[in-house]
Image (cartoon, rainbow, N blue to C red; front, side, top):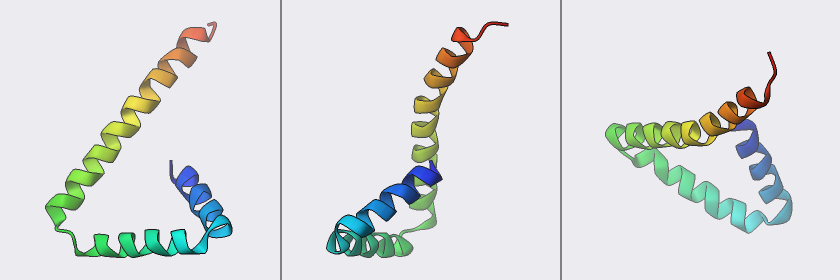
Length: 66
């Protein structure tokens, strides 16, 4: 997930610097959020990642022959 985010950021830098600047301004605002909010965002990101990766992993395991 980190690599995907990095690649998207690199593409945004090359395609449109002003869009990247607005995203960076938004990310800088995240520094001012409370610890509870940051924890809730991290938990939500974790749950989203699990809901994406678990079905993919199950499909891969089901196709694999042992």
